[in-house]
Image 1 (cartoon, rainbow, N blue to C red):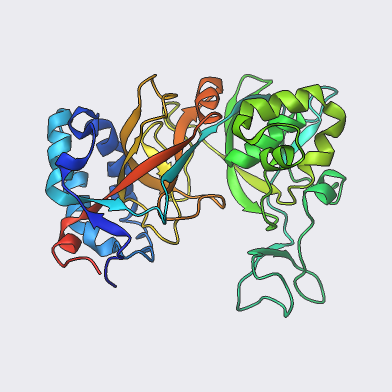
Image 2: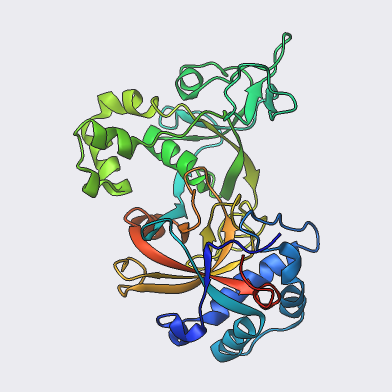
Length: 367
């Protein structure tokens, strides 16, 4: 497999602000992936950044600990060469995501009435090998029945009680909108009523396509498109509580969770690349195109939510998402809790993506 022409070779001198970044923080995130791949290699994305080409960088990352930013920058410059990722006729796009932190109860109470559910036993993975004739090819999950797989219950059906009585409840929340945004983010820290700090992370989904409330509210004229943020959506729901189900049930996709430990409060949940996410250093990418573990230097001049300055930062590809499609498309992990949510909720900015490609691939040339 050769590198795609989507990559345009550059030099580190072409990267705005490269010398000023905190490469040491990015190295720490990269090192987590370097250890994970000893257990299971990452799949090579279709743009041709071969997983095998990372071997030398991963080996060194597992054995060294740079003493400062300069040494970390030298590591990346030795092992990689930057390449601008073509955005397909326009600028690339970054959004933000975070790990919500909400109060919860292990049991249903008068206040806590909204459940987070674990994966049901009748939810099965579906692909072209076992997909019934006529089933939507988008569906990656289905419901097992005596006559074969069928489309799973959607959000509206589940919230109306389709799975009641199965003891799937992991925890109970006080607010349906909080629960929905946990579904969107795919993870959460739960401050339990008994004082424990717990975490839930993505386990599976009902399989239907995601339809964001922001799009619905903009298309119906409730919120102008340019003003759609997580904060404006929450404010609209608070002002129109009688319409929450009407809007949310148009997003038929429903997320199931599993419990996970909070081993290090400074790190986020373990995501698709099977390592804990690092605030400001982990990015979700299109995993069909890109290879997990790839460093990306992202430049977004209009994005100032991270620290008040135009965003320039070295990120490591360690997650993905159904809405993250395209070569120059990324979702920046902002961290955990309300402050991170305030950042993530307003991020929607044009950006340039520079992939750091292993030098062994660059030496072979671009297709």
